[in-house]
Image (cartoon, rainbow, N blue to C red):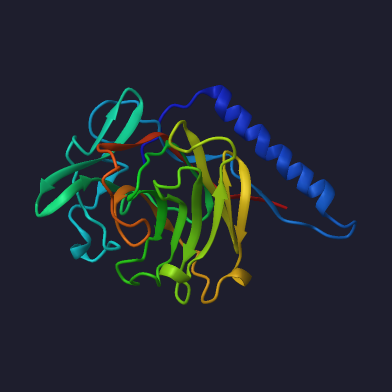
Length: 282
């Protein structure tokens, strides 16, 4: 785990926010004779501020290389690489770039970063500040998979989609969970619509706060969905460690193929990724 420096002001403000929320929940949510459990997410357990130019930090990030023929994918069109043409850190930003080019039998290239076997965590706040690309057939995602996926194939291991987005709809994103009995087109999902703005014109913070028997979904600290065991139509599989993925896909069942108006290259810009510990307060 490679901890990076973060501005003291940001950390202290985040800490104050969660302490205030916890206090308000205790004050307003408890009966006289009851004890209510609340949680804070103030202790940083992993961060990447992308402050070193070049390749992403190899102590945090690995790569999936290839196409959906490797056993993953959704009829997507890109070939994932670890080349600087597709993924690099520059001026404090991680750049994941999709290009239209002939490469290893595919007509597009891009990148998919993973923390598998490098960082995983059960519960906590997972967030990233990202500016999204745009265009028909462009599909960026910030998501998580159960760390036991090698022994418990998808969807049994579980999937949490913190953010996925269709480039042709630049004001709408989707947060979802997938598991046994509720995967693919039957995932438990909810859309969030950005008012008077677009996700491709500026940075936004996408995150979840995840604890025992709940996952809360946020955009810029606006809570827009909560998913609990009562909401899923199968087994709840979200009480174990998960690892992080970030990728920029081209085409696939979720977005359809690019068209003549889709411009390339398209780039997903990531300012930071941060993970905080779940801390239960009684």
